[in-house]
Image 1 (cartoon, rainbow, N blue to C red):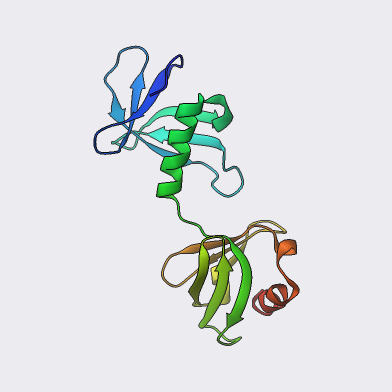
Image 2: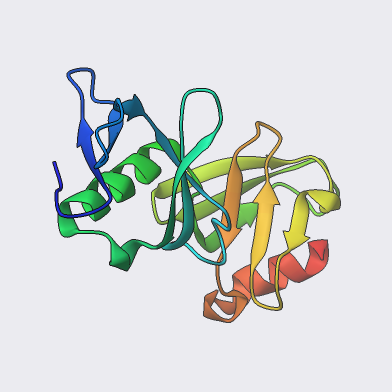
Length: 157
């Protein structure tokens, strides 16, 4: 539990994140939602209540007390799943649909690419790849990929 802030954050007996305003209003269960999950991981986070209404806005996680920051980060990590591709190990072919084997920050994975449109450029160096099963894979920096991985990607871009 955190104190000395306009609200406190804690967990209930079921492990849910609880927001308690300092003004004495009743506590409520909240879920943190990033406004820009790829570009600003630690900025612009909304705490959303059960009815979908925003109960608090966090401009920057660094502004929160340590305990609250840890709770929000923990909750976001459980809620969001976006492995980062570090290397493309291989592809089953160069005509979609195709199966890719990739090394991610969460281990090796296989993804199914339905079409080239499932690869979206977010910026000059970032790509978001949506596989056929609804999992999103992020390439944070194209320049950090090895030459073979970049060559494979070039065939699909």
